[in-house]
Length: 394
Image (cartoon, rainbow, N blue to C red; front, side, top):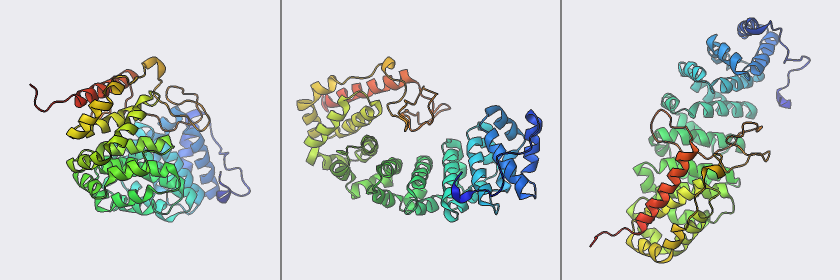
């Protein structure tokens, strides 16, 4: 518990709880108690109970979500913070998300906390909103909230780094669903300013968000106007921070799609292709390999770059190594505690894991190592075909 949100003279983690599900029903009733002490005890015990999936599902079926949404603006800051934390846990279940989505007022309440409350509660509310935005079906409901994208863009300018990171992840998901509201709110220029942030994590997430904006035609035109391909290559593609490089190549996969950007890239194609090919050589980062190869595929539409690639890099491209499924467990990133994530479920925390998503379908977020690595091989074959493409075959 944060020292600024302490509960004096009482052990608030102890609520009078019966056995099993009888106790959960009692806790559900005590949430609405007029006695602040009883309410605090109930909330802390519920936060412990929702860690257990069976208890969490039972509480969801008791419609605890509706009671939590009613008290999310309680006077007590401890109640506000813990309610956000409980909702975050419940949003991890389909049944919990379904009930939260049936009360769209929750998004207005969360935005009120994000914009006006103290930093601990802003963080908890931002985490809840990010968890809800991970589900594609939820994004449509979230976007119906008035000015939610505009307000999030205001908050990313001058909030604490940890909160800004959560907002950028949320914006990335919302822009993936519909980039137009963000583009109208000058999100492109705001993300461009965040590239210069002293924290590289913020810069990387801003690039991921801009990549979603550049899927739209207006975003591509803005990228050409700001000469993004040259800007990214000159300032960020050589970065020693690998997460920044992965985000840069993901953004360049969209900024190099227009004819204007390809002819601009021709002016520094020698050093650009050299850097991209050198990044593809290492097979420890399949996601980076795929993104670099996609950029090269885009650039090969320009005849001069295609000729340069065939003359200097064709043999190197054919020698690219691709991981086998035995060498890869679904990720190459490491947690803060030095333990591998992915299929190792004993880790203390799960951070960003490399996955390839389908754009559409019921299983858009499902990861399968064999299909992932097959996709990497398909990128390599596509790049070789692009290098050897002849506009007029004899």
